[in-house]
Image 1: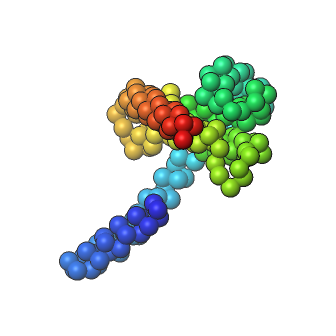
Image 2: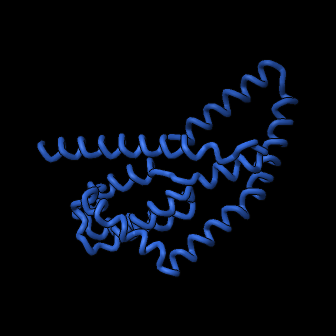
Amino acid sequence: MVNILWGVLIIIGITYGLLSGNIGAINDEVITSAAKGLDMILEILPILVLWMGLMKIAEDSGLLKKIAEWFYPLLSKLFPSLPKQSPALGYIASNIAVNMMGLGSAATPFGLKAMKAMQEINKKKDEASEAMITFLVLNTSGVTLIPTTVISLRMLNKSSNPTEIILPSILATLIASIGGLTLDYIIRKRRRKT
């Protein structure tokens, strides 16, 4: 759906540029945007590699497992359908811990492993389980304590205070998480009644 939306917006922009006689501006923007995009990737890549490396060290050292243990009491309440010793809970906790550091790309492998583990115990293989849906809501709206990627982008674009985004980020993601999980809980309760 997002691909279609972006495609439509690009076609509208190009059509408008052609009709208004700004074909040169379109050409210039395509060339400069591609160069800017590549420059941004090359500038932010070392920062992401550093943080992903730190997360790998944390995983290998057992730190992520310790952090995951802190989340188990909360996760057992959020995912009552998962067995207490399910490996999915560990992957979910690791995903949450890494997402809290603002490293969605480093959290993705844990999310995929969590979904795979939940699918193995899913009774209806062609349909997402309640636990899978709850995890998706939690992963999408997850609380971010340090938005590493956003701070990095702000630093690269010479922001006068790149870390000022931390408090708004915490508030926005906290509200999104509470709202998403509350809506998930309400829908789950209604489905069980029917």
